Image (tube, rainbow, N blue to C red; front, side, top):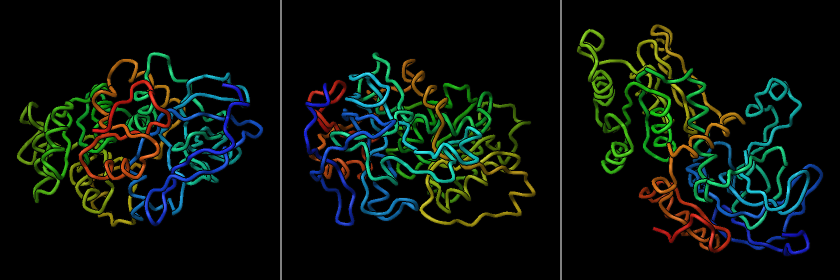
Length: 364
């Protein structure tokens, strides 16, 4: 596709106080160091649905959503036209202390494509810094390519936890990230994995996806149930009456109740990794954290090596679009797709920006 074939205007999804809208806007033109990409698919993230309901602490309405995106390069700086790419969506300054140390995801002047930026991937075209692109291997179809960004999140979280090989793991939440974490933790050699979820349907799904046990997150004794489930199959001397603490707890919900549960499951000596985006402040039982030597670790997005690992996990079939992508909607029907994603019945909902995208199928 040549630059001359790009239309003067295009369609872009906007999240507004009145809901999701598809608007016509001028097609962006790449500046120095940027590329123009034609979107193939864009995933709807939990942060997108939360933002529409005022539950995201860092996204204000209106905004241009779409950070889980894959497409083809049209034109721009240093990338061949037609190259299949996905976007690493955080936008660092490249010059602050964190950027110089290789922690661009913690940039002190961080922007975020599709969240805190004037463009997102839920559009027919977008421009972005060429340094934020990763090549999509030919063997990954578009639906699979849309999973690279969300899969990089649990890869990064497990890296920050110090790995999970031969360790016991609890995962709080059975949404997309919780289920992806389950698959990555299993691939990385976790000894036993217990997942909590509020609905029976999500607990059943977690078991089908490979959890050793699934516990009702709303049960008054949820902490004890998880600890007992973690101790199953281990010598009794290691568990005891109270079960076994989790070596690592991944909190993919990040609310007051789940953080307290996570600390109880990690007691003693465990690590709690906060993966979900908290809707607001929470209180922490600091005496327990101190006395039981519990580590609380935030996990912010990912780094290039996490994208590379996510691509390899997808190539290996550890995660498949057939299991995770449960609905695909056309870009023009974005409002319906967002309702579908927020309804709780889907795992990952995609928007297809062009008809006939490989890997897409009718909405479920």
